[in-house]
Amino acid sequence: MEATLRRLYVGGLGPSVTDAELSERFGRFGKVGEVDIIYRKDDQGNPVRTFAYMNINISDTDLKKCLSLLNKTKWKGGLLQIEIAKESFLHK
Image 1 (cartoon, one colour):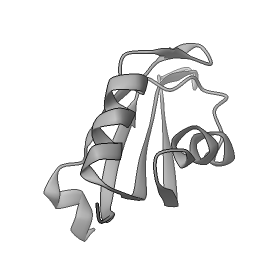
Image 2: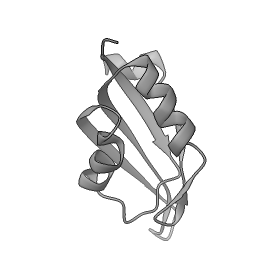
Image 3: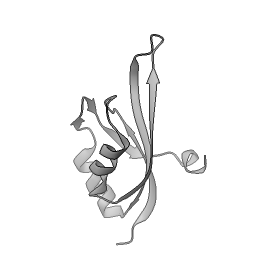
């Protein structure tokens, strides 16, 4: 099964999660490339929402495995929400 470059959206991250931890977490399913972690803060500067976009070279089979094992699981104070990023983010 051939691996394809995909861009994943990973929501529900805890504010302490690092690029390296995300790469390690998803690295068993495919080859992780660029990881962009985005922090949203409220008016007081407190992190309210942390999410990431990541490029990963992954086969369809491994993508299904990754989603079934990690999606909606608790990790580092967050509840992961994983989906394939919308097409518009592939061409930013």
